[in-house]
Amino acid sequence: MKQYLEFLEHILENGSKKNDRTNTGTVSTFGYQMRFDLQNGFPLLTTKKVHLKSIIHELLWFISGSTNIKYLVDNGVKIWNEWPYEVYKNSASYKGENIDEFVEKIKEDNEFSRKWGDLGPVYGHEWRHFDGDGCYVDQLQRVIDDLKTNPDSRRLIVNAWQAAYIDKMQLPPCHLLFQFYVVDNKLSCQLYQRSADAFLGVPFNIASYSLLTMMIAKITNLELGEFIHTIGDAHIYLNHFEQVKLQLSRKPKKLPKMIIHGNQNSIDDFKYEDFELVDYLPYPRIKGVVAV
Image (cartoon, rainbow, N blue to C red; front, side):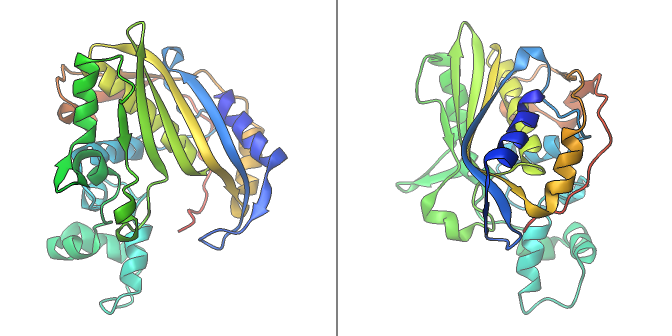
């Protein structure tokens, strides 16, 4: 994953200090691209341990079309908890609960989770239920159908940026548009990401969209091509500098291999238990605080 370390170095060497929505502060650059040949292994960072369980469950959550964190909470995934918690804290219903108590209520109380666990029409909703002209479009299924019948199409696109609904989303999509491309029976995916938290978010994004590409290749009988990651605002938060320096001091190891078990025919057929990562020998985890 030298591509990722070069990405971090590029931001450090070329970035400028900028304020941001979270008031944490960043060093930021604009416009960057990484390419990963998926034939060379699964692009999961080895210079720090990455929580693959969260990546897989989040991706399955996106694919399901859900926008409520209850599925994630029930499966021990914490990555989306802060946003609905902040909304709840600013409501008249807040009774001083800390985030762990809030999450426990999401898990145990269905009425509470329905009211406070929903993020608005974020990723999964737009992938599977994009609203336009009085009807809903399942963008993801449309792309899969087109890959089977017209793989040379230049319209193999899923767009999560529904401009009319941005104010209804607790966090507007950061990874907002992806396009597939087929040549020599190989499936590639290019993601455009408007805003990229280089230390915490980008490793998840690389692995998630690479895995999505593998899943779609399997059900469309295509081989693996590249994952191409194109980024707009690429930034390192000021409170992640020590973590980034530690990561840059580590030498990347050989990439692991992802095995997808089963005979899935549909994108909705995949389960968490279908995925097996082998030969993953990363350096220890590096913790960092998410900016909300």
